[in-house]
Image (cartoon, rainbow, N blue to C red):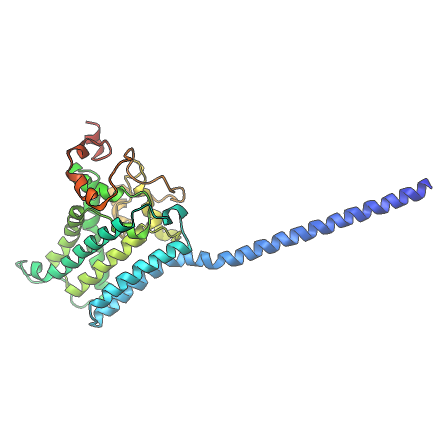
Length: 338
């Protein structure tokens, strides 16, 4: 009797362990299946993250180059502008870097006003180029045998030098910083607020960038496409898309690189001034190439300033207020310590 009970108990024990092994095998298989399904779902998103920036930039700038080269109406450039803004906003919903930055901070109307005014100034500059270049007392030195894409590339590089140097100076000279601080007052990064600038600072940057164009006598169509490229780059540079650019981060100043510049820190944010290229920051000694994945909501803005105005007209007036000079974060470090 004892032996029969022992045999029965042994069988029950084996059956129990067999069932346990089967259950573990089933659970392991189910877990593996879930992981495979997750990877399959994530694969298209990973491709999107890596391809978004180059497709967005070269797609829109290439389209603008083709339109202008074919003699199409300039109205099509405005269509491309609207399409680029819509694409940027849609991509930020598809693959957001920071979900909180997709939520309105009551800044939508203000950002639209900034964009309209600042993009209008770029259009005005392009339209005035023939008049301004006619005042230059020498013939155009712009090369005439290059393909359109090469003309645009040269124009972008020349523009980038001037804008980057003006941007760098705006973090060193108190008078310039007072106007540039408007741009750094944003509390979230998304493509559209790349166009948020004080008109005075916009004029300073555009003038510095366009000076080589004027001296060399840039063709109007090349200037139009390069100015359009500025709009595209600004949206990429401030985008809330979780884009991945790999080794291009050492060359191209898009969002993963530029987020460092918007840190609410007078030291950590004093880097990455370039608009298109990181080369100028390498030469200035201000390049930072580390990961920006840690820069999230609450990490950007003006350090120590909680009451910087949000309304459009108040932001235009802020640099002219006497109190602005006494704010510790407004101005070069040497003057803040004085």
